[in-house]
Image (cartoon, rainbow, N blue to C red; front, side, top):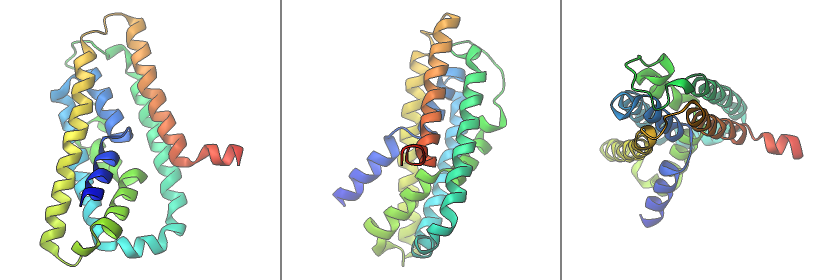
Length: 203
C-alpha cells in the first residue's frame, strides 16, 4: 500500500492539466470560482477511476488502437486551454465578477478528464497493478475511487489556492502577462509531452 500511496500522491500533485488550470483559475478568479472547475474535475476523475477499475484489462489490450486518438485529441484540447488562459491574462489579479467560460466551469473540469491521458493512465495503472485485488468487489471499487477523487480535490485545491495566494501581487499589466505566459507555457508543455512531440521531432 505504501507504493500505491507514493504513486497516487506523485501522479495527483504533479503538474498536469487539472492542476495547472486550477492554479490559472485561482489567479484569474480566486478560489471560490475556481471551485466550480475543481468539483467538475473531481466528479470526472471519479468516473475515470471507476471505468479504469471496470475495464482495466480490456483497455490495456485495446490501448494500441485508441491511444493515438486520445493522445492527439487530448493534446489539442489542452492547447486550447492554454489559449484560453493566455487570452484572459488581463483578468489575472483583477477583482472581477466576470463569469467563467464553459471550459472553466464544472462542465469544463468534468470534460477535461475524458481527454486527459494522465488521468486515464493513472486509472489503468492503479487498478491493473496496485489495486488489482479490489476490482472484483464493487464496494471496494467505489470506496477506492472516492478516496482517489478526494485526493484529486486536495491537489487541485492546493494549486488553486496557491494561484489565488499570489493573485493580489499581480498589479501591473507586465506582471499579469508574465503570469499568464508561464501558465500557458506549462499547458503547452503538457500538451507536447502528451503528444510525444519530442520523440516525433528528434526520434
